[in-house]
Image (cartoon, rainbow, N blue to C red; front, side, top):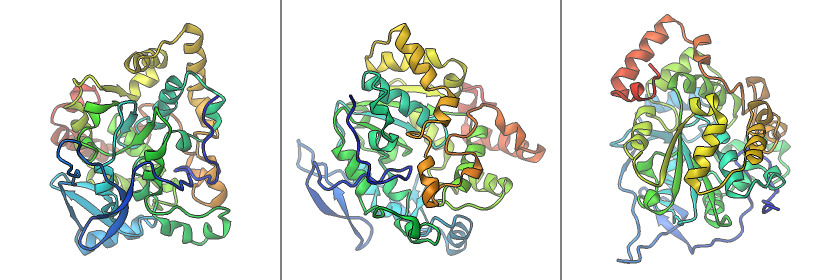
Amino acid sequence: MGRKGPTTGHWRFGCLGVSSFADTPLLVQIAGDRKVLGLRRTSQKCGMTEKFPYTLETPKKEENDLIKKEFTGHLSGAVRVQPTGYFFQDIYRDCADPIYSFSVKKTDVFVASYPKCGTTWTQEMVWLLMHDFDYEGAKVELDSRFPFLEADHVLDPGVFKMPGICEKLTFPPPQPGQYLAAAANASSPRTIKTHMPFSLLPPSLLDTCKVVYVARDPRDVVVSYYHHHRMWTSHGYRGDFKNFFDFFVNEQVMWSPFWSHLREAWERRQHPNLLFVTYEQLKADLSSTIKKVASFLGKQVTSDQLEKLSSHLHIDSMKNNQAVNGSNNAAIGLLDLKEGGFIRKGKSGGWRDYFDAEMTERFAKWTKEKGCGLEKEFKWI
């Protein structure tokens, strides 16, 4: 039987109710005089703490006001990481150093990706492979089994004070640092989800543990990400697709720039602890991809196990699986099921139903400019 995760909360990010830390909690100085509860990772060689090496820059007022207007769940506004340009909610300031300094274990397995690239699909596969096909244990919500490393700066606690949500809550809203603490305190072997690019993750990550990175055609990503932003109150986007398309191409949505994110992973693809897979591979030949991931993780899979896991991971099964589809969030107003659900269509090439001629031309130009040849590696253009 698998470990039964905490069940005090029901939103997709997981209200984990962590009450203790495996590492010593302390106050970490972040930006100016702001302080947050973080986890310090001390080098055994020199006794020094890993420090976040980048600058956090607030966008100009006009841009920041636009973000808060168009994305009503981004209550704190926005921040950019310089010189890389990665774009987040401003509450990332309180999480940058603790995430960068997160203590990684050799037994950890990370699933990393830019959002909407098949992350949940891959998480469920990896968890079952790492836990000997424990389908009973897999009935526990995925976020309890597979903590989301940076959820503290994705879900603004202020969202839980919004009308339509606060009166429906039957459990306490998340506390600062709660999700990072949940990842730190998860039972080994820890399986951890992240959308952070490699440059903002612990520098020792790949030299310490295994990482499965998932990529997807960005034309399909922008469509799925559009629905994702409309679906979640924590993003609160109510505009149309063409407007969101502009935000995506202008690298004004969380975890962008897309091509920088992908390039950081691609440049590390020869590292023995990194496995690169694509959404298109998962879609075209799920069984072969399962075997590839299993081999990378050092796991044996029988033909019967492969057949059962392939069935479990089929898109129809995933859409109806309450442990992974986030449906419990709809009851408290965090999720709008009219947008198709957290797991929507699971198809490739759906962008053709959304792009007009001008978008197609603009996206191709953007891809050639920013992709710098990567698009050819994946045959996306």
